[in-house]
Amino acid sequence: MIYLKIDKNKGYYRLKGTSEEWTELDQINKDDLLKLLEKATTEEFSMDEYKDELLQNPAHNIIYKNIYGKFTELLSNKTRFQDSVNLMYKSAIDKYKIELMEEQEE
Image (cartoon, rainbow, N blue to C red; front, side, top):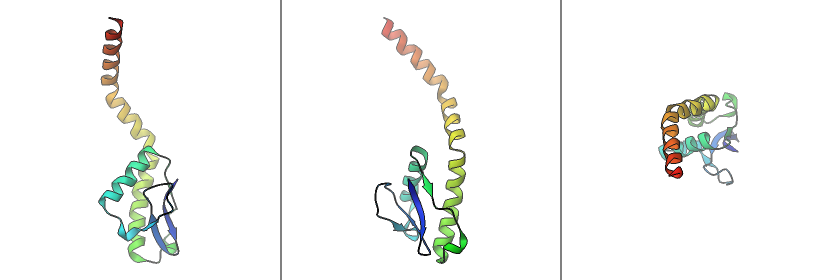
C-alpha cells in the first residue's frame, strides 16, 4: 500500500492505507511519523520514488527527500532488523516455551 506520494508538484502522506484522504507533507508531525514508521515495520509499505524535479514546493522537497531516504533505508534493512530482534529474544522465548511445556505435562 502506498503511504507517501508526489502529486501536482507536492508531497503527500496518509496514515490509513485504505483511506483516500491525503495530507500535504508540510503538515506532518512527530505522531504522524511514528504512525508511518509503525506501518512501515508491520505492513506492506510503499512510496513514490523521490525525484527532485517533481517537487516544486521547497518545503515539500526537503521533507520528502529526508523521509524517503530514511524509510528506504529502514525498508531495505527490515528483514535484518526483524531477524536481529528475534535473535535477541530467542533465548527468552525458548526458556518460556520449555517452562510452558513442563507445566502442561504436570
